[in-house]
Image (cartoon, rainbow, N blue to C red):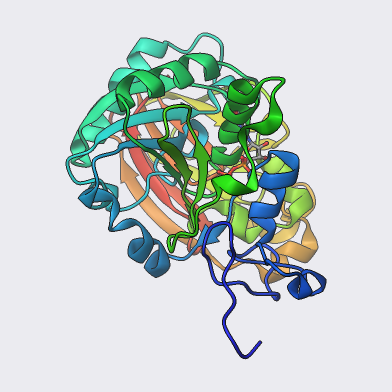
Length: 368
Ligand code: GDP
């Protein structure tokens, strides 16, 4: 394409190469009188939004104006990958605006999870990140849990202002917005029409609210540290929990190791006998072995006994990198971005974690 065409819906630059990227339009649609990107097309015709990712730099450019407006910011985070789905430096974009945090995928946490405690933990995390939050709600967009309540809270807190819904890719932002669209439009699907797409230069989709203000769906930022980037599509299905996680408890002595497939290895190097609780997809096998045998087991059996990933993915997987942790407080989670977490019950344990290079790992106070 020589000349630049912009989407008449959201104002983003049209491109025909990257199907997942912002502004994608099939080449055949370029001849139309008004060109709209695939994302706006789906919203217009199917009342459905689709997330488009942006890289870090573009994201910063797009969102820095947010803080200059008086709006309600809704931040969707993924409870299964909380740290990974927290947009870095988010508070800088927000300015003095009110923030409502929607912690999504609560359906994945065990039923016994204490929701009040979890919300208090999220509030502390937000504060530590320098974010002033108006409210925190636990929702499940795909299971329609807490959606009505979230919509009501948005309406109350926004107090006539526009709403910006933000989040990393894969947190369930589109699922949430689609549920909101269904809820607000009900039988009357006419709420979203072409006339409601004013050209903007922010590549944000806007969904009109009844008082003339708008709900903006902002593009998602990609979370590069997720294990999702290292496995095949099929393996990802095994890695990503589809239903309530069943905690798996291991009573370990020092000198024992746990393998989560061949994706993560935890060595209990030192400390008195301790309980380790794995919160991973129920489909992911966890294998216990002696630390002294762990290297050999991985050498001989990764891709087979220890899987996923399978042998093909292993060939392209980055080498495993070692991360050392001393567990200083009882009930500490060792969190692997997008894979899950291992909760250590007693303090004093020295744990070495091996992960493919580039996968994020962190520790936190146990959330369950
Ligand atoms: P987006 O990139 O933030 O727009 O995320 P999507 O809405 O496309 O969702 C990403 C993935 O998370 C999809 O596989 C969804 O099915 C899944 N998902 C979304 N909401 C939920 C939820 O509440 N619970 C669970 N378990 N999965 C969800």
